[in-house]
Length: 171
View 1: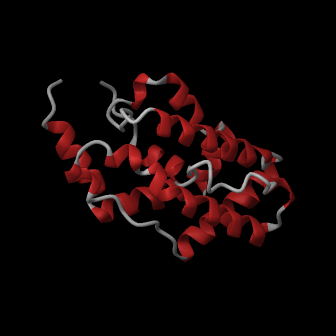
View 2: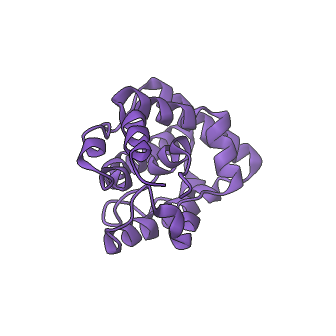
């Protein structure tokens, strides 16, 4: 079984939500930096609990370590950087695509309650939906969003709980 990168999943998790909560009328291509940061936060906040479901479904010992939605000035800076980076590259429309894929991904999770972090790699549709464009991933990496999400998971004990649970499973 291939265990996907927790940092990459956390970053994708910061952009996923239940289909009912995501405002698909927002066009990220029309937003200035401040509005983009605000809407990116709304999207990330709406998504956090729903997207962390793939972790919570593993085991109660893991579920209790799922962190609350993280937001602080570092996240605000990271999202501002993502806006600037993607705008300069002419790829800001990719953020709309990622949002739309998030809606579809969360519907997939709702319809497939057996999907967890430990088996999600067996669902090609899910992997495709939760994988942002290369330009989005690059912006997230350069701007520190992956590091921030990973740190939130480390600080809550989630990464350690997943690693410990995984180590006890037959290979």
